[in-house]
Image (cartoon, rainbow, N blue to C red; front, side):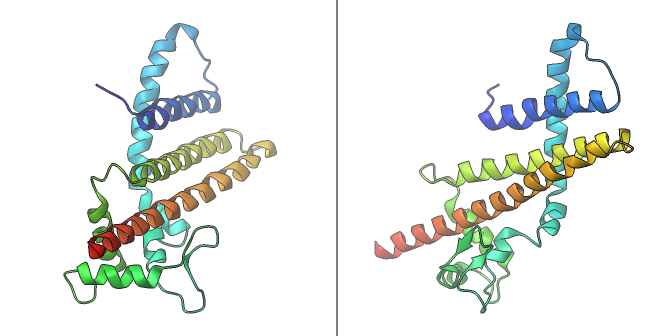
Length: 202
């Protein structure tokens, strides 16, 4: 069985971090004799956190105001771009019109339009979408893991004000998740538009 760098980061490292923080939160001593067992447990914990982060994806989207793909494919007449100030998409109108031509329904939803864009780009090893996808997924897993650790530490040390400072790095992780979501969705749409333009030119 082969492991990608994403498997290593999102399962073993994230799992080990969560496991060690949990031991500290519940005042359980670390035993060096069980180092191998800790690594095995870390992989299981990391696998579990990956599953939880996937289940919580809709919740995380809700916290950032909706799916990045929906926001990027929703025109705001008061702005010259869609998305957020950090991640902007200036050619949204052209992309939407092109996507509608490939859609089966007459009034496709933003979810359907984004699915068309993803389907058109699947399997292309020359694009950067897999990298952006992995970065987004890792940021989601990291946010979920840090949320769990923060809740454990605050629950076990609720009377110590210093642990409430964990909210600051949590906000950083949350914001990074938001940005990575927009970066990934924008890359998919831009790659789709590039492929569509090349097809028309041919």
